Amino acid sequence: MAVGRRQEMHEPAGLPDESLPVCVNCGAPLAGAFCAQCGERRLQPGEHTLGHIVAEWFEAFSHGEGRLLASLRMLMSKPGELTCEYFRGRRVPYARPVALFFAVNLLFFVLGTVRTFTTPLYFQMNTQPLAQTKQALVLKKALGEKASATDRVETMGDYSALYESLKAEVDAGRPSTTAEVAKRVATSRHPAELKALQRYEQRFDEHTEALSRALLVVLVPMLAGLLWLTLAPLHRGLPELAIFATHLWSGLLLVLLLFGWLLTGVVHLSRWLSAGRVPAVFQNDNFASIAIGALLMVYVYRALRRYFEFPRVGCAVLTAWMLAGLYLSLQLYRLMLFYVTVYVMHG
Image 1 (cartoon, one colour):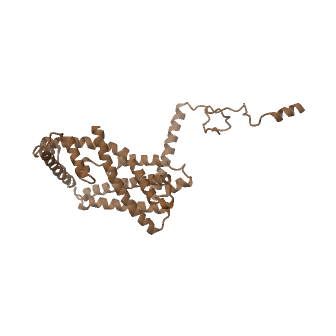
Image 2 (image 1 turned 90 degrees about the vertical axis):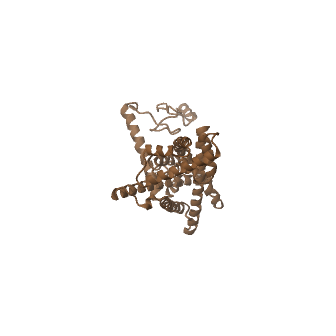
Image 3 (image 1 turned 45 degrees about the vertical axis):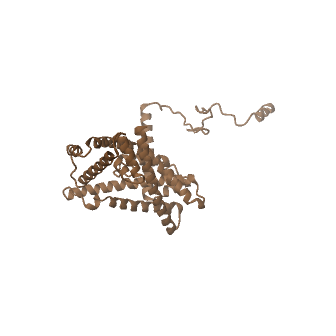
């Protein structure tokens, strides 16, 4: 008996129980449904059946959808609260910040009616910064080296006149047919050059729409960097501000998406009630710009106020500063989008 007890005393403690199954991933003993060492789930009987696979797909979809919907609701109802929840450690009920941003990005480009970030060629060539430089580059690429400076200037004039007339007809509810547009091009001062510029415009717009979805992500580090420089005296870290910027841009995209739906619905309702006519206020680009600016200002203020808990006056000043930064970021994004599109087309 003494010998047996001495053997028990000298037995190493913590040896695995050979009666327990082991984890197929790391070899540790499994005492439950999951491995305590690596987290691998224990294989259960019947997991390779079609019914089990379908059930797993449904569970993954419903769980991911629930996280996304909860995140979207939080973004719209309580701006800034999602970032608060993230740093409190309550992350399981919500989508991860980067995944949420890309999901909203996809929704915005697939379902949105406001083309704030998809800038067509005409808009690029007629807005600052570097409008004249962009015009010269496009005319050189579209018309070739042999076109004279006079031909380029006159072609640009014909192109602008044609665009403005077509836009006015669309706003009035009387868009021109393809044959009518072709007739106007044929009677212009330089029909061959104008056709070449139109073909270039079509290719450019197709490329820039696809590229805009990927390049939109650069707005997040731009905003995070601006916040970091602004709040440096308060010792706010760049990683923290990057999370806030990701959530903020996700919310702003949602605001733009919902505003576009609302404006489109009002325009269609006005046409239905007034025999195809749309009130002049809804045709004015300034109305949409002012309305969007007001909505974004309210959203940014609420997000800053909830997360940073600054006083109202300080938060209002920071909101104005952030809106100026957002505008500057948008201009830089559009400039980057233009040159990346041209590079992709000719690189």
